[in-house]
Length: 149
Image 1 (tube, rainbow, N blue to C red):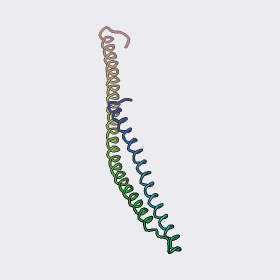
Image 2 (spheres, rainbow, N blue to C red; image 1 turned 120 degrees about the horizontal axis):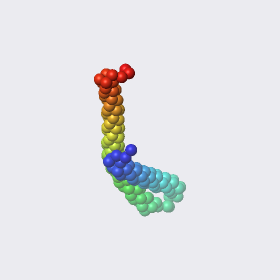
Image 3 (tube, rainbow, N blue to C red; image 1 turned 180 degrees about the horizontal axis):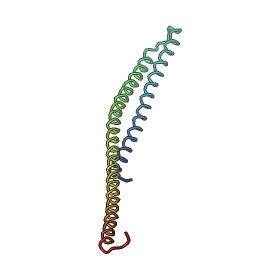
Image 4 (cartoon, rainbow, N blue to C red; image 1 turned 135 degrees about the vertical axis):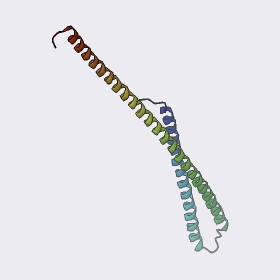
């Protein structure tokens, strides 16, 4: 049964789904930046180990560049984590709004069902009352005019 709240439920459902997809994308970004940080750290360790065997090899400039890369990846990961936290808050609010709309639609359907039930019961009561009145009228007519009882 359609309710006046169905449109709101559909809109809120879409909003929750859009936010869910955004959260998924942001989680992928966080994971990507964390992996980039780990890759830079691994490359730095490997370069330091290989440079340790050759005293003539200077890796200071290379390490500074990799440390800058690691810092950039850490900044991006931190920004992604902040955005992810905001998206999660937004998702929580959107889900709450969806649940409110769903509950309103459910209550409306129950209200309509109760009204329909009351109407059907009133109709049955009216028919029953009409039958009773017809029986009483027939009995009164029979008693007044005398006929088979």
